[in-house]
Length: 333
Picture: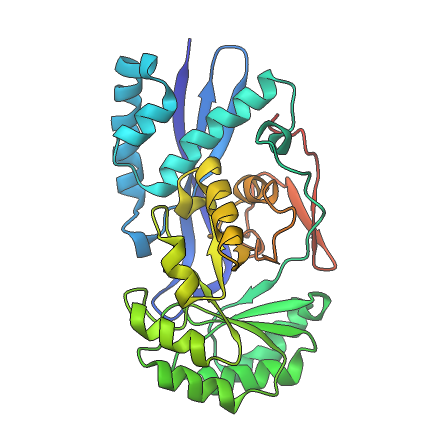
């Protein structure tokens, strides 16, 4: 008996999560379960409205998948996932739940089942949402953010200077700037960069909208800092083209649509000579655990999506002095 189920999980956030395009105080993710009658696997879907993914869509598409799987499971899961037009976050959760069950049946850890090296307790950044500059000092003190080697700060074009200046006064480590497509003009991005060229900036993440392909090629040629793609890279992106636009890419399982797609994107990016960041959405430690298993040898780690959750239900991953650790690597194996 092969059964599939899905359950929503309402995540209450510790503070208002504001980025350049929206803000939120809670999130609804989903836990997908696959059970073959002997072993089961759980995985998380974290839908993102930027890619047209809503909770309603996830539920609707899961019902379509479940019905289709019951009729065509003899085709194999991989074929079914290729045939159905599913949201990437849901596609990932379905594939990952199956992989977790198969790993358990094989008596292997997740990274072993995937043919990967074991995670090495990576350093992660901590993302700071957009806020009034006057509130930054208290936020950094309250959350003890100087224990992190890297902060990722969310900015918009209007308040970018004030936010960066205030963070730089209060925080001693390196800053990763994430604009979430806030600028439209590459020369304005360059102007901002040169105004802050002496600050401890590690890279700029997605300063302009993803459709500005030529503008990104121009920006990369003239930038004094690394430019990392986020919204520009999804499951079917052309890595060869992205390598002309960016110095690196932010690969997220929820955008890739599966473990194997993410692994392929990582290797393809390396082959094209660009760096890789492993990122996440707002996710429980179940979702972060999935990404954690891919973290060996990655240039930049940004797996902080569970820090903001007040009612985190799994507690599989924890952080100490900016490093990530796994409470039990056999938790879902």
